[in-house]
Length: 272
Ligand code: KIV
Image (cartoon, rainbow, N blue to C red; front, side, top):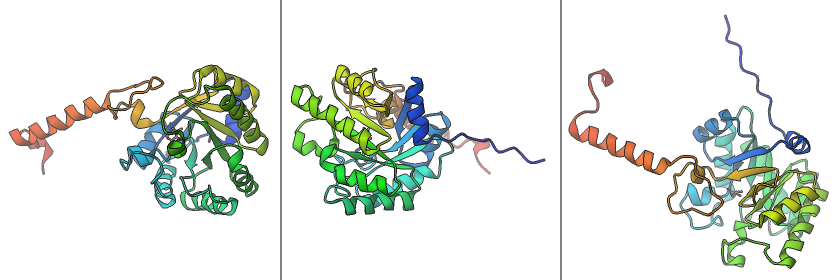
């Protein structure tokens, strides 16, 4: 007798837009490797972001700038191999889309072809309009990213809340409308005042996924290492830690080491 294979209804970009229109919130988390992605997908998270935050949490860089397109493709391909249901969105890394629209399209095509990801994410508004258009014209779905855009950290000089001043808030609202008009299927809105984020979410029909943008938006995203409590140094106000994995892992590893040194591991049942 054959075992029936479980059928999964895959999340698509349209699913997300429909969820917004029904008032259903969207869950999104980062993942960068096969094993973690299997858990995230199996837990029913709607969107997996292969974020360029891999540069920080996987490679130990101070910023997201050093990660390369090849490295992003490696992470994304590992994630895609694990997926049954979630939509996989892959960050276009710094330097792979800013110089011109043709280069942006080449980078996006490489991600789609070589990783099997379902969409790309790009940081910025009107200044990258031509690149977004070209990628969308090639049939590649684009998620925007406004507010705090970590690839521009050296321009901002700080990771504090963006768009507190009227001029920047106004530009952000215009950028959100522009991204919707161009055809982006969703926008990540990072670290902006909750009231502004809610206004933006109400002004567009595509989902606004917040990180540090309050509860008035259409979904939330966090970096998985942060929400599992693997990092101890990073504790912004918006971060809710669902586990204290740093402590739990440290205790388990110390126990393992103690067991080896005391001769308690392996025991008779753990050998051949
Ligand atoms: O790279 C990333 O993890 C991100 C999220 C913080 C939204 O862009």
